Amino acid sequence: MSASSFDGVGALTFDVFGTVVDWRSAIIRDGEELGRAKDIDLDWPAFADDWRALYQPAMERVRTGEIDWCMLDDLHRMNLDELLLRHGIGGLTEDETDRFNRVWHRLDPWPDVVVGLTRLKAKLILATLSNGNTALLVNMAKRAGLPWDAVLGAETAGAYKPQPRAYLRTAEMLGLAPERCMMVAAHNGDLAAAAALGFKTAFVRRPNEYGPEQTSDLEPEGVWDIVAEDFLELADKLGR
Amino acid sequence: MSASSFDGVGALTFDVFGTVVDWRSAIIRDGEELGRAKDIDLDWPAFADDWRALYQPAMERVRTGEIDWCMLDDLHRMNLDELLLRHGIGGLTEDETDRFNRVWHRLDPWPDVVVGLTRLKAKLILATLSNGNTALLVNMAKRAGLPWDAVLGAETAGAYKPQPRAYLRTAEMLGLAPERCMMVAAHNGDLAAAAALGFKTAFVRRPNEYGPEQTSDLEPEGVWDIVAEDFLELADKLGR
Image 1: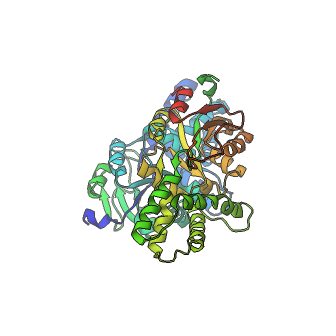
Image 2 (image 1 turned 45 degrees about the horizontal axis):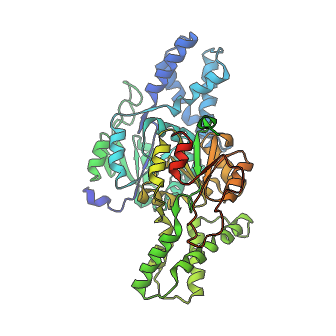
Image 3 (image 1 turned 30 degrees about the horizontal axis):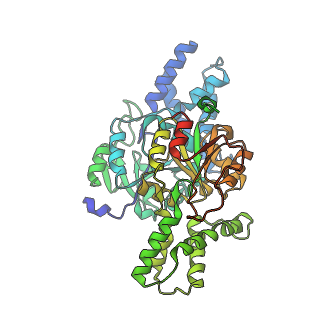
């Protein structure tokens, strides 16, 4: 597809965890620091993976209505408390636990992200379409220099991806038909949900999101409009 | 109050129409252009004032529940249709009317705004807290180069200022107590509503918002934390 095929696209909507930022390295980094400070001996890479593994089941409880709407900071905290209990870690103050929970506000972008987004921002609206809550995404962007035009997603839509409302309400708030939005994600499932609603799609490969042993989302598994190795190639393919 | 009194402030929340952008000049500008193109002879400054005069009554119908939630683009359109009827202007196509209605997406900032916001952004979260809908504010920011960290307000809160929920939900979405937010506005009423909920307050004088004959909001009418002539003085007083 040539760049001109995307002339009608007005906004890129970005998945954030894994696509824009590397959550795993930051959790390991802050976990190891906490471990040194509080004399906690843990396999922090495994802890990071366990914390992330509780992410979808927690959101599913909200999606199904088992629990009321709950922003991601609160779901992360619920899962963190569960993991601390599981590992018998009881020596953290409320402030220490809260600070560690907010490691999700302090994730670093992949190396290509800020340069790529800055190029893309010249011509397109850049919005998050993330399950992260607004404060999390705003604090992350402020720290990392992510130049979003709009911070949208689950909290502003009142629904967690892949529920259709998360995508449709985001497009609506941008004043654009779904066809004029392109979902950018490293996850085939996210792109499939967006495509089913009319979004254009860009798969960006993030083969180390889950560490060196990653087995999922290594390849595009659908007919996506763009496949790119990183945000620089995405900008190239969009002609920006 | 010295700059250090504001150390706890994490975010500035901005009123937009009148405080950040000059709505009146843009409506006159685009109205005159439309008038030339379509041979419509109108007093466009008076038209601008009339359109703005219908703004509060329209929002009041939403606030009281007389009509269901309706974003500002739709209220502007309802009011525009009313004014076109009142002036017997019937020769506009749907596209022309829609385009003129979106003049609110194409407002220009006061001359001090972009420089002032850029200084303030280095240390503080800058968020809109406007009755404008998200698309309107995002398009305006993109065109004018307004470096918001978050576009929030009536649409994301589901309530029009001065209803408390508009302010409180915005602070909540930023993850900050109201006391850690400073409302910036050229309107005493907006600041009074915010202050009653715990927000800090900054009054910025915009004596020409309503044109050369402006009689309201020329002076601070409350004990605001900061009074500034423009966003540069605001940045000075915040020590940024």
